[in-house]
Image 1 (cartoon, one colour):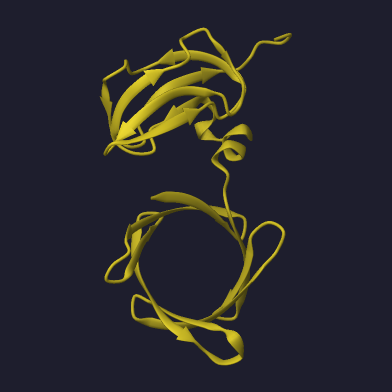
Image 2 (spheres, rainbow, N blue to C red):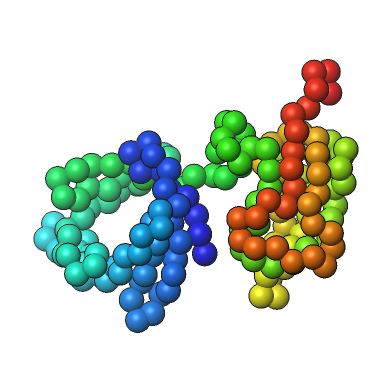
Length: 167
């Protein structure tokens, strides 16, 4: 499982590598072992990250959470991949595979107009089907895999182009 977090305004890719016997996460390609050490003083949590014990406090806000540890306070929130791509990021012109697998069905073809969030194709990975949607409004420029074809994680499966004025 992977997701992006915004920490102090910077986006970081977080992947859960394993949950047992301890939580192992990969943040921007670097692995960390996280162990729950229980509650500390004043309702703070205590965790060990790669053996280093840290006291931290957290609270919720409108956008996510506020975390304080090691003398620093930071806002942290999940990054919605649809909003990230609609802001013109590098992924805004394509739909990438979130995991290796194969194409089950294609709902949009080259030349079709799509709206953000509209189903483009369905993939399957380890018997789990996932619907991939358009990250923004646009025109399907190319569908790079046919039904039944396999692909790797992060491979571009569909390319989008901008809608022309007046569409």
